[in-house]
Image (tube, rainbow, N blue to C red; front, side):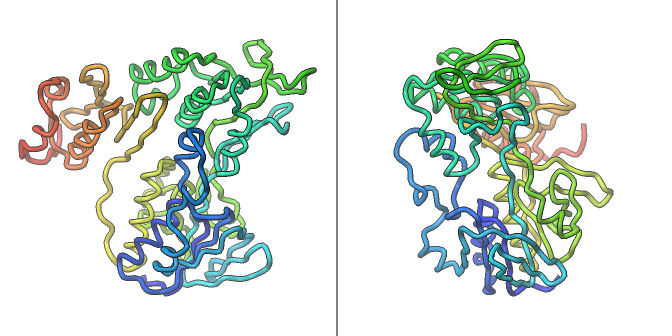
Amino acid sequence: MDTPERIVVVGGGLAAYTLGDALRSLGHRGEVVVIEKEPAMYDRPPLSKAAFAGDIALDGLAFASGGKLDALGLRLLSGRTVVGIDPDAGAVTLDDGTVVEGDAVVLATGGSARRLALPGSDLPVVHVLRTFADALAIRAAAVPGARILVAGAGLIGAELTASLRSRGVEVTLIDNVEVPLVPAVGQPLAERLHAMHAAHGVDVRVATISSLEAARHGWSAELSDGTALRIDAVVVGTGIVPNVELAEAAGLDVDNGILVDRDHRTSHPRVHAIGDVARTRSTDGTLHRREEHWEAARLDALELAAVLVGQAPAPRGAGWWWSDRYDVHVEGVGRMTGDGTAVFRGEDVAFHLEGRLLVGAVSVNDPHAVRAARRLIDQRIPVEAAELADPTLPLRELLRSARPAYAGR
């Protein structure tokens, strides 16, 4: 593929910023135009944590100042919405009719918070958490003593619940499963993490919302377990849906995400997709799960930058993520489900071992363990379950053992 001189990026999240930065690092000197409907390009993870811990400004979340963007040669069109793309022409149309043309178009449109579809879901006290404005709206409702119902106890819902409790909010946390996050962290750690909510005074329930309505002195939520709650606000944290509308309208292949190959190329050679919205389709047609983690968006962008300048992307390691709640920091790498055996190192670290290959690890307040595990996974260094379980054996010793890469069981 010829190196595109002018690149138009739709979306201004982590994937878009990383792409622009990486292109410059790799020597690309052509124009890079980023079109973002938000007022700035900013980082999202602090929205469920730092945004509730103290005063926070959008500038404090921005990936770069205006000066740095200028230095990078990134032309940011913020507060603008793309209403259509023309893949053959490499052009996008903005909401005011302006057409921006490029040699390549990159869709980094991310996802939107999943909304409820039930009576009362359009009430003004129903919130989601995806943007800076969302965080400000929830924060305004999070006054001490307020009663807030959080629907969804995944990573975002759990982080937000902890943040709300830190502000003195009375939180009811509901999920449709008894123990969320089992696929991500395994059963024992998932149980431990979920139990933290009740220990911090959260009303934890296995339920969904049946309806929301105005009550005599505020608002009411009826749950699937038959109870009715007096509430001041609801926050829905039940995942995202990929923003595929532009791609779909342009005739690109879409299936719960914009379908791309390993080089992040969509079904049109002039259009690429990265980040939360992209879903890889292998050459044999196999569809892979979309990765909705911060690290995955960053790696997508780094890989695509290499592809666009005609270089081979660096090998991609196991997926990595992190989460913070109350006084604990949780990190994970790889997978904790599927074929294999669970191995535990004390109460804070869990591994998933397939044969003699480590395929996943999760830790509570032990990020060094996950970093070491990540290298063991990526380098395919064979290990024994007894070694992983031995807390007196530093994991870095396994890295130093210089064993040959493992080729099979």
